[in-house]
Length: 331
Image (cartoon, rainbow, N blue to C red):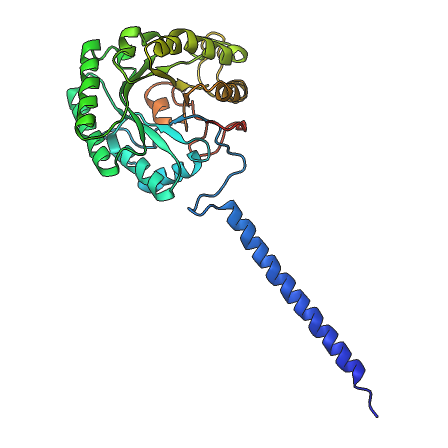
């Protein structure tokens, strides 16, 4: 009689091994897919473990958003927001031209990220420029509503450039505020300028103060820059604003990575790292509100102005961090 038990047993063992291998492969594939999905959020944003929401706010100028040579594209700005939303929940734009506000707000909505923006109606000596931006702001407001708009700035450094009188700017601030209220919305209206220009008179005209405070242009050594910034802001802007019952924000603060030095201030990536390490977490702990200057390098400024002007980006133009981002959650 032929013994058939051994072959059958071997066959069962082989089948069992095959089943185990198949299950292992399937499990591995499922594990890979689960892991991959953990790296990508439901809205298509690839999570970068080197990025942290450690910035209270960041100043952002989309690529090719300078009038009249507008070349901004929705996809480019959406790709910017995918990265910037991992660094902050607030952005500040500098103008309304080239659909930059439309594209930014559309990206925020499409990606379903928790972000707000301060929009700016650019102010210079050209009434045509102002009217164009003014009209565009209210068009954007009507289209998107107020929920993602933290505030609106009527101008940036208009007093510093001496392109408009104080009374003219105050009149424009009042006009924008009245028109917003007439539409049934409640959006704070302000302007941003150098800290030295933020007088009690100006504070009285805005809904919250917004001052550019740059330790670099004060010629400060980078090791002293954070403490200088806090002291200057507290003594010259925050204290007066609080006395007037108004909030205060540092609208620009940062460190350049290329360009001419300013006394003790030297532009370099290591110095950017030092300022990030000494300013960021301390500012968050002290509940100081600020917009980091700025999101990405701006090559057009290098071409039009100086190497220094174009190299303040936290990120390179291809959205790569220049330095290590401290991990300290901003409020």
